[in-house]
Structure formats: structure tokens, C-alpha cells
Amino acid sequence: MDFTVLVSDTLADEGVDILREYCNVDVKTGLTEEELIEIIGTYDGLLVRSGTQVTAEVLAAAEKLKFIGRAGAGVDNINLDAATEKGIIVANAPSGNTLAACEHTLAMMMSLSRNIPQATASVKAGEWKRSQFMGVELNNKVLGIVGFGRIGQELAKRANALEMRCVAYDPYINRERAKELGVEVCTLDELFPQADFITVHTPLVKETRHLINKDTIAQMKTGVRIVNCARGGIIDEEALADAIEAGKVAGAALDVYENEPPEGQRIVALPQVVTTPHLGASTVEAQQNVAVSVAKQCIDVLEGGSARFVVNAPMVPLDQQARIEPYAQLAQKMGKLLIQLIDGRLESVEIEYGGKAADFGRNTKYITRFALKGMLDPILQEPVNIVNAEFAAKERGIRISESITTESKGFTNIMTITLKTDTMQESVSGNVSSAEKIRIVAIGEYMTDMTPGGDVVISRHRDVPGVIGQFATIIGQYDVNIAGMQVGRNKPGQEAIMVLNVDATVPQEAMEEIVKIDGVSTARYAHI
Image 1 (cartoon, rainbow, N blue to C red):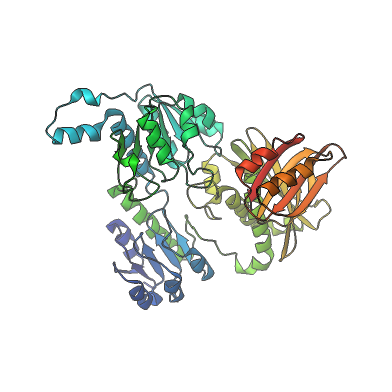
Image 2 (cartoon, helix red, strand yellow):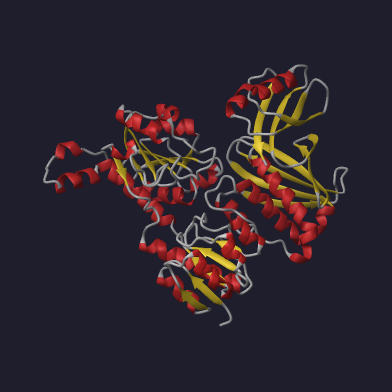
């Protein structure tokens, strides 16, 4: 055995046993940072859970380290930038606890519907108050699933078996995939009014923070029951508490909270609320699964392969690095921009390589995966990279196609990415003129010359006097400085496109005012 691996947090025996078949393994838990720094230089791999803090100082001392595995989903305790800089692969096990989280959600729904925790406490207190704990059945109820990834899909299978009718909101899965699972895809505005139970399974990002709030609760049925086993912060807990006290919401089941532990929070004290201390992944099987997953990925990496769930930036192949890296960087930024310009459920991604960009041959797939990473990483719960990007897209029923052409539309090289949804399509074209100069040269049919990065507002509007002035006025009223502006058009007086580079985030309120300007058909804020 040429490799030595350190396991510095408690790991299920199944994972350790797999490692020992291929490597020398030391299990040393409870190490201080100083103790870890002292010994880490002798190890090729490191497996942790949440206890070990893998800091920049630890990584600076890691002279041989090639792999860090996190037995679980979160990697907040690992300095990803420092690991990437040293070429150390960091991987996690995001799918190992899928069934555990799914089953916990189902258990919370059942506990909520039949008042099981409250009734248990009452009996243990010597009471016998059957009439106080009248419940409701799940049969024939409508389950609204907000976020239809792995956990949401597994939950739908089980809810269907209970003869619930499942409706789901997820802007990034197509109707065909949902239909296969017996689920009706709908908008949030359609989901909220019809659901008897609502469960959330989204990542916590800007768009999902307080997704369930005073206004969205007002759209819901009176007597709705709400479950959150995903991320604290998706629900505005104060608004939920108000709605429960007012009788709008019959009850809630929470495994995660805006602040953990939720000491002194009003929502926890309400008798209609079932609470657990972040137990979604706390099963024997889940801990075995994540241990086995990171152990196998560690072996794969140490033997020269790749990990399935890499969470830090993968390294560009050294013999192609100088040529490919600018294209990969551009493709990722183009993908990130495009996903912020579309509406609807993503159905397909088409990438065309033209001119000298076509010379990469098989390496175009490498660039394509960076484009997929740019599109999917902001919207999926699990980290996306070039190792798992294609898998993540196909899992969501998204079709991927590549094409190569000698045409380059007046440039020496060009990449065009087209996204199609069930309601629209949008495309962006980019050009690499040098390793230091990457540009977005077209959005849709309009030419532009845009350095991808920072904050932008992109609009389509009628090319008539006054529109641009109104844009600038609104932006200025919200104390956002305009750093640059480009306008592209095909014919005077018809539709045109405008790209505003701005120095800060444009508030949603400002965007709502902009789209009301006479002559503006669309306006999007994007951060790339």
C-alpha cells in the first residue's frame, strides 16, 4: 500500500473498511488545528465530517495531500480556495442522505397530520385528551413539492403510494420527466392555492430566501400544513408563526431553522408546530452511505481517477491549459448569464463551436461541462462541476447537444450557447481573442461587446427616444451607478437590446419599475 489516509472525524466502519483494503488508514479524531498541522504532511488523503476544520494553515502543511472527502453534503469547514490552489480535490457525498431526508420529511408530514408528538407528550403527562388531537388523513390530499430534485422526487414516489396527488414547482425540470414520476408541474402561483401540504426542497439562495412569506402564505388554502426539512431561511418564521396564530396555517413541521439552535424563537413554542433538531440525515444507513461514498471517491482519486462529487474547481489538463482555460472560463460565464435571462423549465442546451474553437475536437466536451456548471451551479442544491455537470443535467431531463462548424460569423473563433425552455429560448455568443480577453459578442440576434463579469441589466425595448433616459433615472434613484452602456439594434425604431454595466446589485423594486416603462418588453438583472 503506497497511500496513507487520515480519518479525523468519526466515520462509519463500512467506509473505513473499504479504505483499508487499498490504503494505510489512521483514525485520529478530536485533533486540534495545531495537532492536525503537525501530522498532515504525511498523508495522501483526508476524510472528515463537520468537526475537523480544514483551514488554509492546515492545507499549507499538507505536502502530499491529493484528496479531501467530506462524509456529508456541506463543506463549510473546508477552505476550498486554498485546496484548489494546491490542486487538492475536495469531494462530498450529497446523495448519500437522500432517502434519509425523504423519509424524515414523510415522517414529519405524518406526525403533523396526526398530532403525534403532542399526543405523546400528553399521554406521558398522565392525560387522556383524545378529542384535542383530531387529525387529518394524507389520502386524497394535494402535496405541493417546492423543489423537485433528488429528495423531492423520492418523496413524490412515496406520496403517490399513499394516494396523494402531487404537484411540484421547479423551474429546471421539464414536464416529461415530471410526468414519468406521476407529478404535475406548475408555477408557485398555481401550487400554493391548491396544496393541502407544502414541503420545500430547494437550496437556500437569494431567490429562495423567505420564499414562503406573508404574501405567499396569503395565497394558500386556509388549513394548509407546511414542512421544511431542507434549509432554514426558506421560510419566514415570523410570518409563519403569525399565520398559525391567525388560523390560516393549521400547523408546520420544521427540522431546520433560520438560527440553529432556535433558542427563544416564537415558532418553536407554538403547539401546532412539530420540531426536530436537524435530523434529516441522521440515520445509520445515511451515515454508512456517505462514508462509503467518500471512501470510494478517495480511492478513485489516489489511483489516478476522478471523484464523482467534486466541489472545488477541477484542474485543467496541463498539456491543454493555456488554450482551453480561457474558453472554459468564458463558457462558464456565458452559462451563468443565460440561466438568469430565461423563464420556464429548462429543456435543452445546445452549444456550437465555430472557427478555431472547433479545433479542440474531443476537448469541446470539457468546455461544454464548464458551460453546464455555470448554468446549474447557481440553481441546484448540490455543487456542480465538470465531473458531475452532465450527470446533473441529464438527471433533470435536460438534453445536451454539441455541434462544430467552420463558420465563425466574422470572428476567428466563436461559441454560441442556446437554452430552450418550455416557454422560450435565448442564446449568447462569445469570443476568445487572447488568454486575457474573453468577450460576449452577441445576445440573441443582437451584436454586443461585453466583458463577462460583475452586475448587468439587460433589456429588450423599442428603439425610440426617452426609453434609455427613463432607465438611467430609475437606476439612479436607487443609488446604483451605471459603469457602462451598450445598445444594439438591427433597424432604427424597432426592437433593440441594451446592456448596462452597474456597480452594485439592482434591487428587485427597481427592476419592477423598469419593466413598466412604455416600450420595454423584457429587463433582467444578472450577476456574472
